[in-house]
Image (tube, rainbow over all chains, first blue to last red):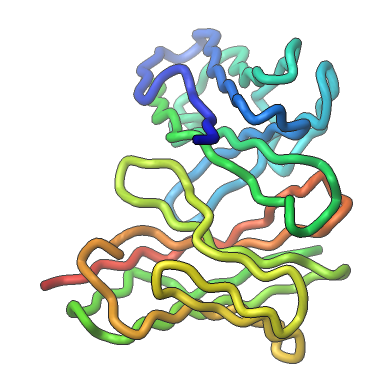
Length: 116
Length: 113
């Protein structure tokens, strides 16, 4: 079974803390993505990576950074957590073949982060 | 820019009722279209997809047809079950753009016995 795992299902942090969210995929996918999910807003792309050490900003990168040192692992970093970053964070991965048949994204279970 | 609009929820149905969730899109290229489902407490799973005009995606009794003339990809099921209660997301991706997905806001479906 293909798998995307995230380090925590629930996380509670305090304002100003540095927060690390980890994501690992076992499908040898080139692309990895971080989204946040908020009610009524759907999923919004924070950052994505198309190769090791490569990253691109998504639609809402402010307040976040990412790291991809190995192909299977993609980390999301909140340098100084704020209450407006309380949300559900979802990681996903996909191939990059460009062939429509292979462009599905596979999602992890999500991390619900609460910043107090 | 590219965008997806889907009907607002929540949608509340009785078991065995017919389901339609509307989805329309705006895209400059030739998108692939997807429906993802999120069951309570879980991540998103691909429900079905269509990669070109007039394709019909189907899975678990759900269907959606890629209509280029109306830029729509409406999700339908003839007889819903309580276990179909979830949030449904319509999404699109443009080939060659690192497969980035653009999502609609999601529609929550609640099915009662």
